[in-house]
Image (tube, rainbow, N blue to C red; front, side, top):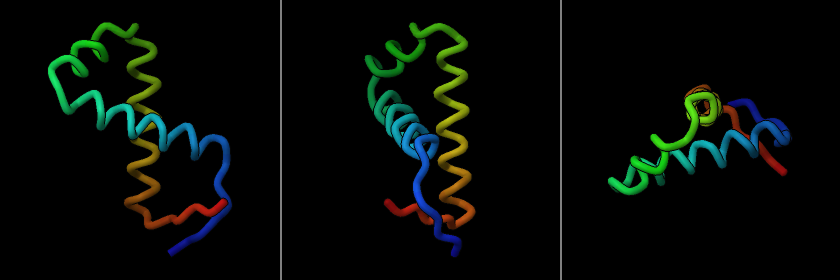
Length: 63
């Protein structure tokens, strides 16, 4: 497993992944996410995908 120091980008990706998980837990969350502009939705989903890929690759980040 690779290990590296966390970057600002990593932290943004982690927050985006959390936002996607929370938005999917309720109808109200899904509706609120859908009300965001498409560009914002795309940015959040892209960053969340980057975080999922980092986890799938087994890369650990440290402070």
